[in-house]
Image 1: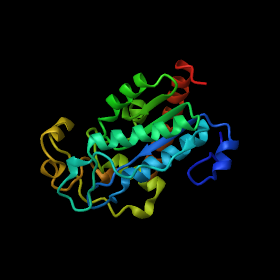
Image 2: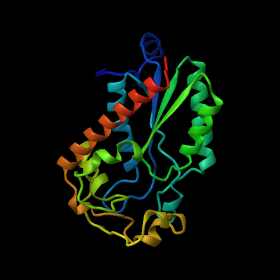
Image 3: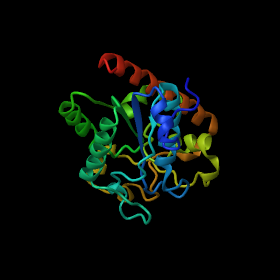
Image 4: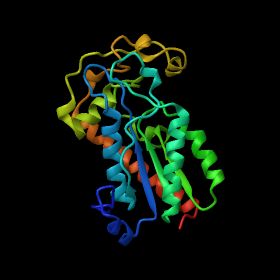
Length: 240
């Protein structure tokens, strides 16, 4: 484990002297998370998981993008979002910067589930660049590792999972557990209606079932899954 990875807090001389070949880009959001969690919940979680993964994988830790595709939360004051094409353009600019500086790959870690545009964007960017690879880490990477930790079956937003993670990472930002709501529809309904039309509390899940122990277990499981996946992809793609 690399306990002190080079990051945006390092000097450029530190980065030059390091052995890093890859970087990691956490992506969060600024959107309502009910009455119990802060607007930057996704950013807090993405930042801490990426920091731990960077130390395990010897990656250059980039600052977290704090805004992303959160249009489904419009109507809640404080929610600020990017258009999908804007996020794609930002990602491409970051990749070009890293390529120019000799990096070989970028791990993109999005905690916000609404950033669907990242999957096709990463696919096309990998086809466009023969000298650089982008590894996308999402819920598909670590979802199976969370089975058995949480009780809520349909926990999508500001519920048991995210509240537990914050109780582990930054407990002082959690303001109680009020606002539990489990809609009878599936997440695809967000393609048709904004969150506040589906859930009057802005929550999709049950934060009352959250606790710090679950959060710690989930945090470790997510990091471990990311590390294994990235190591596998680096080997499979023969990134050197």
